[in-house]
Image 1 (tube, one colour):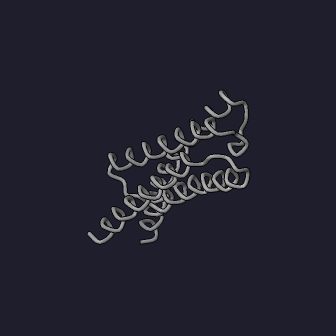
Image 2 (tube, rainbow, N blue to C red; image 1 turned 90 degrees about the horizontal axis):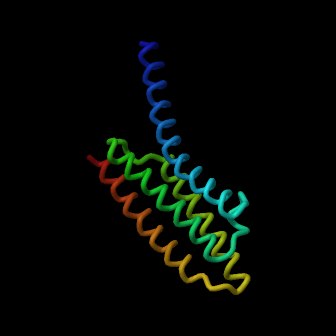
Length: 132
């Protein structure tokens, strides 16, 4: 009995690590783009269109990884929502900084609203999957 529990725990950890690896790949690629093009690791220091390009690459890469997980038949887990929330908080921090500096933040606001809508849709699918 004890051996079966140990094997189940190991399998569960492998599934979680697979999800983290897939999501981290998208984040890593966007940060490599950030370093190669803008010669920085800190996305908050970027100005206007440079941050928007980085943020769109980050979001599109992350959502591609989410859809890739769905294609593999995996469920959307807490790990996915932690990544979603951290990406969203990065956009919120940049939005607040732009508002305080008096910069135009319309495009970033539209992207954040779209991100909220997608997060709600993903959450609805997650709840529907749990009920089945």
